[in-house]
Image 1 (cartoon, rainbow, N blue to C red):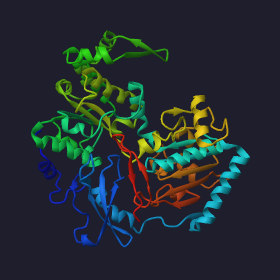
Image 2 (cartoon, rainbow, N blue to C red; image 1 turned 90 degrees about the vertical axis):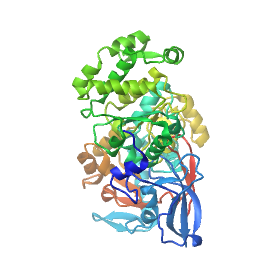
Image 3 (cartoon, rainbow, N blue to C red; image 1 turned 135 degrees about the horizontal axis):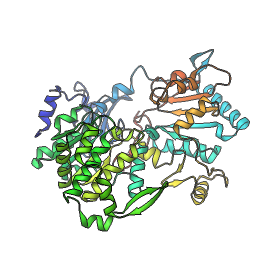
Image 4 (cartoon, rainbow, N blue to C red; image 1 turned 180 degrees about the horizontal axis):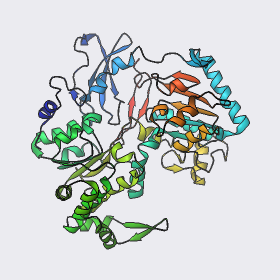
Length: 520
């Protein structure tokens, strides 16, 4: 479908103000303000992983306006509706403003001294009576990189437990597994500038229009410039992205893997692959008895024989001719793939990521302008704040792992920790951690700016573990900005600062680190 930005906005029924899926280029969030009286500060929006540059207007210590920063090197002045509402969010009357302690079953206001003394007392008692592994930390991609790093250092290098987890375990872990198992290194290798050079966009399990509007706007700009970029959408949902698609592959939920295999089948059968690239840069492996085994290209081709478009169509419900069309378009390139939780958040998420990477490697659509597999981050700092700082149970900062004795020794020296303080065994992953909480093996849990009392799978037993009164119930501390379904279960609630209220570093989807300064 040949569509420009204006037509797409009209299709969404949001003419005038570009609402949920819309973008604003440079305009203030409140047109009635006296702009001359405002102090404008450079910052970075942290409501998703795009990392848009913004300028924030401050008047008498209050955030009152926001506009895109035209000088930002990648987003160039674009912001979406999420950013424009920052002043209202920061100064919302619903914000948590004072610590709360549960007394006689009710959360009541307290002082910081009383709340922190109680937290320290409970954690100290648990460690003394049941050891370091009786406590745990559960963070998120909402934290500053410095916050996640300090929590990781405290628990692993200070307390001596690897029970450090974060909600990226449930979302971005599949993308990590896909990148590491394919390339040996985490994170996308492409950047936002690739959007301008791409001729084909492959959107998989991503409602980019509403979840990453600035990215989507750049795709539309690509089309407006006359490049006539093709858009392929692989998604069982009928999201706004579908209205832009030249091809919408609509599989039965969970059956997109056969479609991806079938696209590879077509690419191989019609010799659309890049033979020189494969010869120089690609190795093939299979698994035998649980161990990787090197194979050749012909073995992979034979494997694909079972995934003809017709067989994939029978399994997925996607017409075979559409699979063929999509494969041919993908191979033509330059092709840029975008995906997020629709591909990642499932039991086969790593495999799904692998199959997308396979298509890029087969066709050589990688490492050149406009050709790259690009996992979009949902949270503002899941990459830089959790993965890079090593704030998961099995890792240490910047690619180090707890199982490696040299890595442990290096971090103990950097952290000033006693030799042997960092344990060689990984801690509990997210699901194991909350199961241990329900089994009373975790006595104290510190949760930071995430809502596991609402977002965990198979939720009821974990809510009971956090909040149901019983003898020896675990002690739960939650730090957050607003009341949530997790704060209602907590023994202590600590009010947290938003990104405009503190200074620190955030990562973003294209691996760039950005400083957000304290403005109020």
